[in-house]
Length: 404
View (cartoon, rainbow, N blue to C red):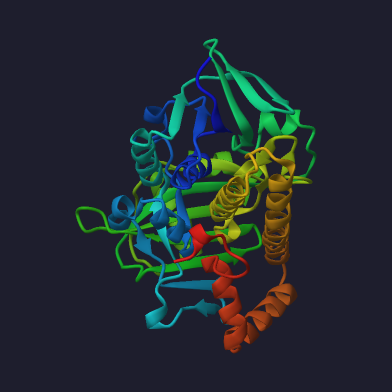
């Protein structure tokens, strides 16, 4: 049996490993268990996705010591343009020059490489990769898991960070509201002739949003953007099967030619889009974080940021509880985490779902109504400020790790 640690974190992805590093900075030790090898997750071409990291999430990465590795790899998001099919009436979110960017775009691979490099050098983290969990146990006095190679790990608190299909959450009997959008996100990256000027575009069509997210220019100086193109599930395979030329021609139409000539910069992949929201995010000696707790539509790029807020809040309540003499699995500590994160997660999930449905209504009249509303928001600085603060993750009560 390996030495007991404060946490057993099941899932060493972006949220799970960030949680482990944040916990280590607060004096908490952890076992991190993941079925995948880090070499598999960081291989070229395995994951072509990119993530928008909000201002608050960037503060978290800075506070756990990752800024030096990540700073040269992220592209600032200086503005966000939201439009209904490129028709008149768009909203432009652009902060004042002295307020910094709205966030930064990173390739998921770069985020993983930085997290994994930091974890390897952190003695408070025992990392068990490429191994399955065959059993999980939670009792009054602690938690334990048995790995496929026979090892047993023990701790005070189990954290479910395995993603949407979390076995630990399901074994705890935690139910969730679920539905399928019957959409798939076609994800790739594009080289384009004209610069993006660090502007993220969210172009809404009845079939689903078409998002262009700015990336840093390539080493050769070629302009690049990440593409997240939502299509009906029945059309996704056909989109992937299109020739490169035909695919780029369709993308040009959706973009209105705004970036000039296009070339594929990454393989095309498709991911199903579903929704789920757990009824609870705690149980006896269990905390649920990230996609295990809430899976939302990528429409506003908030999924990962929501999970990082979970991680920061959980570390704060654990550290404060331990200063008061409470152990990490104490019910009072977990109750505080539940209260803190439940309302925020539910509100973000509800808003993203409502926007998805609102912009999915076809027809000229709904489009005109949407554009009328967007035009009103464009003319109301206070409302725009509210939406920008939400996008940057700086509204509401923030854990210390999310503050600058």
